[in-house]
Length: 323
Image (cartoon, rainbow, N blue to C red; front, side, top):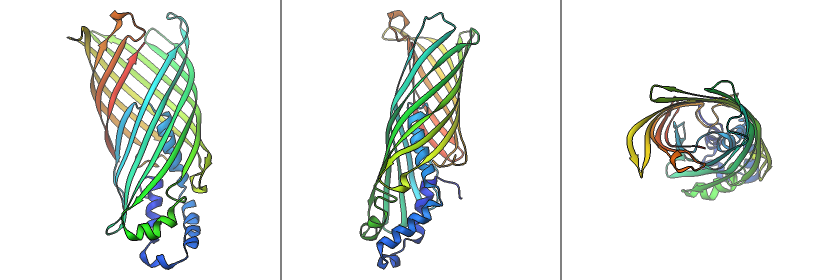
């Protein structure tokens, strides 16, 4: 199928034959035919990708703008996450267990226009979070291997607004609880393998963080059969940070400049379900050294980053901390 989100392509398919002439046809017959046609698009893979992106990806706060596809415009994916992590064991231990998790809120919006003055504004909203446990295994003074397993939960809800008379009088009864205006719950579980490399070069600390994840995503209940899904998502993330101290202070805390470069890629048969399968990140931020206070939190990092790729652009916040 053409490049673009599976679920958005399904909407284009639906609107392709939803013309004013069909308004006189029996609504139930149209719904049955639409449900049969959409089964072949594997629309559930798009829903699985949305839930996995919300529940399991390491993005604190970011907004993505996938490129427009035919019939679909103004797509926007926004993700907000609140992470937490606890490392157990002695500070000097070579191997230390950890527990990590986050709470997430995500929205995907798109405008769908099939006739003049007939617009459908649809929103997929996801709530959820994940909890993972693993080990930090010291391979050397500068490198750690980090295997982990995780489990998560996501609830995805869709709502749609129709701006024209055809949409409100004909499309709304056709699409309600079929393509739009439904909800579904899902579980996400899987495993990851990460690398954490940190080394001092002169006055600059270089951090190389890599992570390979594989997750299974399965709906547990849905208000419509089309919102049932069972898929898997594999992703690779690589991040390079350079932290260089400055002579500046803020509130008495020494400041460092942080440069960031990142790359993320999604693999699998439905890797384009969100409209993009890979993207880069470039950013700049400041890091405050809090170690003099004797707190558990030793540093705090804030900044901005640009997101760009073959089929997407966007921006995000750099949020980081060390214990």
